Image (cartoon, rainbow, N blue to C red; front, side, top):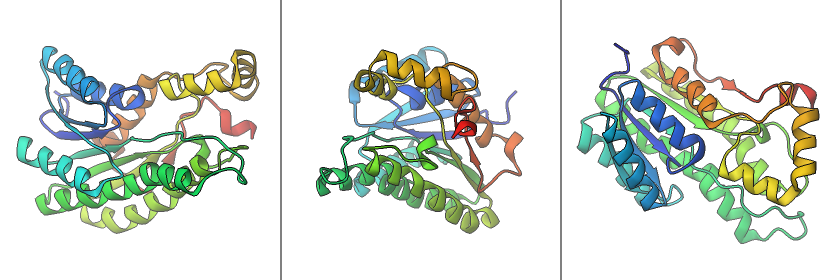
Amino acid sequence: MSEMNGKVALVTGASSGIGRETAKALAARGCRVVLGARREDELAALAEELEAQGGEASWVQTDVAVAGDVERLVDHAVETFGRLDFAVNNAGIEGEFAGIADLSEEEFDRVLGINLKGVFLCMKHESRAMLAADNGGAIVNVGSINSFIGFPGGAAYATSKHALVGLTSSVSAELAPQGVRVNLVCPGIIDTPMHQRARGLLGDEIYDQLIGTRIHLRRAGQPEEIARTIVFLCSDDASYVTGSTLAPDGGFLLTV
């Protein structure tokens, strides 16, 4: 039996892509899962799917940029299942790609509000719940290869993802002595709806050339591959891992 059996895991951005696969992977390990995202229909369908497979799941419509939404999500996890053991802060958007002279202040604020402030708000309330219970815990934030490199038109997105490195390491230094590990996962090009939108913008030829020349494995990753990395960081197998950044990117960053 998994040591994760019966533990409670919260996943934001759970309605699709990496978040959805992570929720499924945690449920497969025996976790009771709380799902957060903005799209109600997708959340309800995923919760129903997990329960049909014998798991326990609940969901709350959540905009992570809104403090009240995040507090309500964490409170719901504790009220429904009695505790919070794992938290995966995955919610994020790519935003509008625009040159710095054309990028609006409103769009910059919107992207950082979800991708950076949202993670801050989640950790603020998740850590309170974990510390109050005094059972330890693990938090995994989801960044990107753009946590390390920028790209033309990506000032807002890359800034939001770069900042997660400092945020994660700072919170790890604070919480690890109290039994809560905090790590960052920075995926490469993963076959998710977000990356399909990027393919649409760049075109198939340019996108396939990027994959064929920049990624050692010569393919995009799959969401379930990132989910397995996240589950590892939550598990006891990673009991001595905190403040770390893992980049499951198929070798992309080695060619930068």
